[in-house]
Image 1 (cartoon, rainbow, N blue to C red):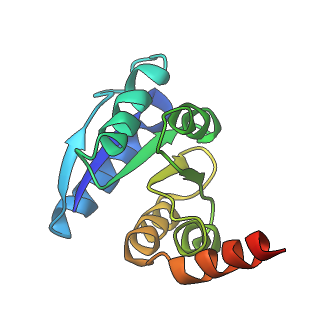
Image 2: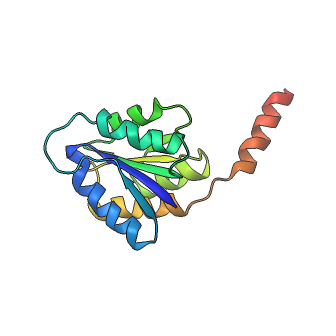
Length: 143
């Protein structure tokens, strides 16, 4: 899978750790920056990561910041992106299973590194249960 990454200075360390994990798992990585911990404006790096997913250049994206909130908001402004801010294993699983999230946001200041890496693994491995969604939409449309 090809995965785009983007971070600001407050998420840089986790971006680098996740990049190592992704490469070790055999994924291809498109790193949109930032490339150090010098202060930057996060949209400059988050938007290109999200746009790579929207264009189909990457199948998924992962963005990082201090809290992950601004990064998720920025990514979700890109048409066709469904970015989920995840803070535990369950939110990661449900974001894929129920929401088909194609971008993941992680806050480096909010969760420990080992949990962030678990979240990434779960998010990558969990399939979307699309059939349930389509069935519910059909039920609602029939009302």
